[in-house]
Length: 270
Image (cartoon, rainbow, N blue to C red):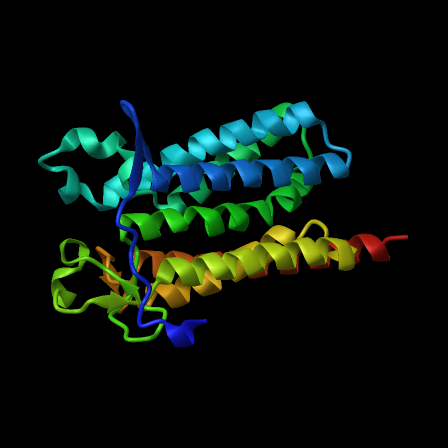
């Protein structure tokens, strides 16, 4: 397919207007991702005997606190963007959600909610393991419509065209860039499919599926951070999210190792 492309054009519009209502594609894709992830996580939890009312209450808290955490993390690292328009700290429809901030806040809400409602935490994590990358895969297309989160200049057939107003000053003369949103979306879609497949074909991995998510997402995010052009901080050549990605990879490895050793210990106990 890409043999016939010179580049991928950016969308001419980023929203739909229905009377006084303004619907941004960014918001629509994020909402669609959350809705599908909600459905998948709930279905998996119920399949394993979980209470539907409990998972819905937990998912609501995860979504609310996840969005708050994602927005606060973004605003705290892009303060100069809001100096003259401070009220836009709430304008999430224009973009600006830090994924790792959302994951952190959502994870905290998940742990406390599970304890408060008496839900089994490993089962909850297994239910969410493919749902999270599915939401990310869909939500990333909102970045396409906002012309943001692209990579370094590229002349590949699938490079995305970026309008001059949205190009970073260091690459103002470049017209096409790596579509990092596309790379991450496809990877996350494959990651969600892999976890669903492992759920059925490798039942011994139950209780460790979230570790596979952390490993898989940490790897792609680390690689993409190497070609991102919108980072606001770097240490030893790596962006803030690059370092967090390394942490996610380590966390995934620890979860897999700990759950594996715990399972083997229980199996060997007479």
